[in-house]
Image 1 (spheres, rainbow, N blue to C red):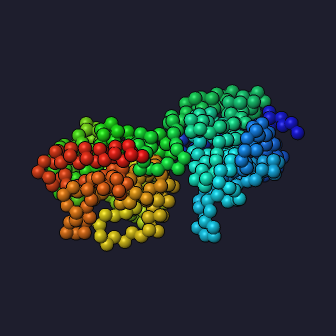
Image 2 (cartoon, one colour; image 1 turned 135 degrees about the vertical axis):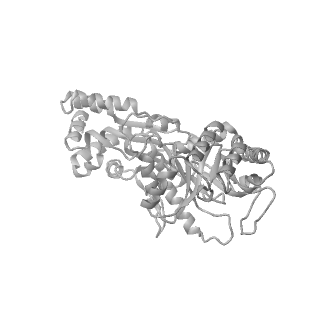
Length: 480
């Protein structure tokens, strides 16, 4: 049966699968239109027509079917009924990718029968940036399946297709948003103003980043430049990677002193050699607004970020109240995950309230501690990693001591407890040397405190640590 694509678009508009106006997207940005293709499950005739179009697109490229078994996988959740319909039309087996791995039974992430090396065609309803498609592709590849082809119903024309092509995928879209609004304007379903609003929106909201992603990338073997270009790397994390490369420094100095004057004095001396300055403002006497302004000026002068090591661990609303003050001067803040995801949601809301903060503020979550007797368990660490993945737009990384904690190369491992002279203090703090922390422990950025702050010449000490840590990082990625 030949499908009248023009009628299909009009019918999708009539059932409100295509909406026009002003809509707030998940990313926080405002869009002039919204595609709600979930409604097609309530209109079997539309679902059937869409499945027929996808089937036709697959059969056009069926020359590779004899090489390996071909399977279908819909990106959860909207594309699942489409993939099911296409599976029935083509008799091609289907796989289901879970958004979260099962915690019981087989604990599988990919459901269905398959063999290593099977080819999978991924089906998606809409593509904007390509994030959801890539997440599905990576999970399939992690299960030793091969993905080359993706079929999308609607391309929003914001750069997602181009990004996935750069990743090595073949993308076929049945419609793009320009074709859709042109037909709807001609059919008098939308006004000329609504049409132009959509055209302008598409032109002014292009995805900026280039996507480069390996299959199953190893975080510690990838350079900061490559990791900054990953699809899932947030803007604030990109900023940190760029800064480390510009300064050739992965040194964070913890300026744990007791007066504001000492804070500014040490910062002035170590500023040229660091990528991050870590503070405990609540432990320092004499800190005023002028002190914080001076810190910000030095951060700009010497090109480093300020991190307040606040270790927040309260309910979401309380954390919001605390962070409203810190966010004005600190680029980064540390938190415990003990309160769960709602605490991160509170921080996220503070950042989203000010467009100037978007992409310029981030969070490190503490997953492990470097002191004896801490109560953090392996299950706690796993749940912390899970939370970091749910809030990856603001979480830049984890504070941890082990190279196997962070699975994603888009996150940064920040490791404290580095000292080239001492191995332990009187209160159970364990130290490790710069080489071990980078090569063995997997740190991307190392935190040095007393080894620099209490040195007779903090500037020279910072320079020494900076060179040692950076050269060790270069050694690590060069040996990959």
